[in-house]
Amino acid sequence: MGGHETPKAYLDAQFTYEREVDGAKRGHKVLASSCVNNRVWYGAVQQVENGVAGEVFAVVCLVKWNPRSRSGYHFAYKEMDESVGPYEAECPERILDLLTETDRPHAIDWRARCRAAIASRRRDVPDGALVRFESPLTCSDDRQETDFRVRKDGAKLRFFRLDGNGPYRVRNFYKLNWSIVPETKVHRTVFARAGEPTKEMLKCA
Image (tube, rainbow, N blue to C red):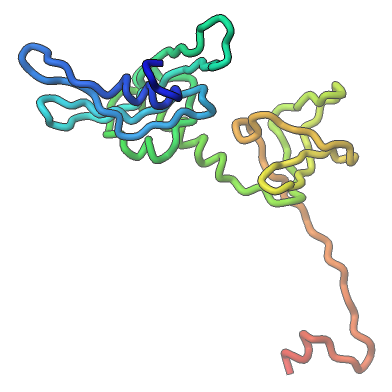
């Protein structure tokens, strides 16, 4: 990869250049980038002409990287810009924030999908929540379920069927359509003994 150790480093260099065209110096500069899981590279790329900064648009590259490949084909990529409406839409927010306004319909839609994905990943799922999926999920035991109880294991989410079986892993959870089912919490009622005030009663005195 031309002396670059990672796909990100290579693509950062690939999209940062300057050339002389019709007497003018034109090029691009990568302002920020991220290579998500070394599979998809997202970059905020700025057009530059004669040293003057111009439009900032998004470039997306599908990456294949296998440094241990025995065939010798360690790296390949396919590039596209946001105007074609890439399917991959997990661009980090810090990159989206650098993009200048656009009137290209596919680019507008792509940016909206990226923002929606960011918002989805920020949704809080409380420990013990009842999650309902819009479409049934097929479990590894071939049962189809829509409702699962969620248990948190650190930053990870574990899913249990309502009969208690599990845990299950749900791939791309935040990309799926789901909702948290409201539940009525039943609290135990505690009665004070006759003549014995409760803490609440003491506070009211």
